Image (cartoon, rainbow, N blue to C red; front, side):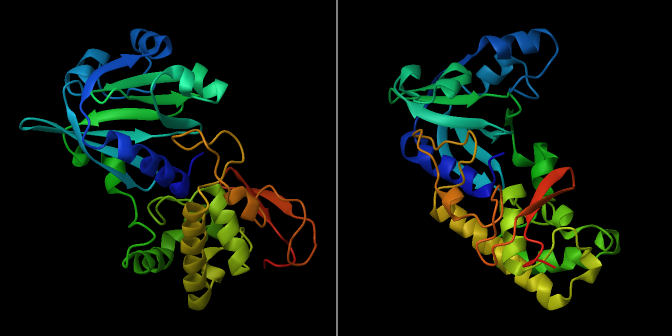
Length: 290
């Protein structure tokens, strides 16, 4: 699943061609149309397809933002303001192209689901190989409560204080630390890859209970969470499976991973082990992490 660094790069890739452009037309794939007809909300959530078009076509994209793993398109048409909210799910992505043939990856080219035709001649294409992603069109961000529950962005000055205050709550004390930092109410945008890497750098075993971490370990862990997310952005995200930038390029963070999907610890030479925590495979070094 694309995490904060990957979503940030998708956002940065589409901003230059999309901000300021007007959406002339929206086209949906057969899978999206069939899903709605059969009572399933495939990709487009919360609105009928024609209603989605009504609140999208003719609107200008004023500003694009990222909030945790969500991309928000602020759009307007005269005095009407809306927000298109998108989550990339497990394998979604946006591409800026002149035609579908310009999407280099055959899987993304084949599995397009929404095309926004822009007045600058470009196509903003949402592709999703597994169709777990979603796109909503709402009048205001408050109309989609899950976003309001997200922790401060990890780079905000208030993020560490928020993190430490959450860890002090009784309901989190008996939970594995890996489980807690995957909760977007605790840390915004930190998924499995970056959680594994941050815990390795902090020397903390992912199964340790929150109550076993002293104050210094908690602060150090947040420092490394922020560090690995910053590195993920700097290296263009992690392309260990299907993730691609808006221009089709791959990220390079996978070249800098220490434990996630690695076999040998680069520090001590011990074999990397895995353990299922919070339904996710946790990768760790049993020697360097305790």
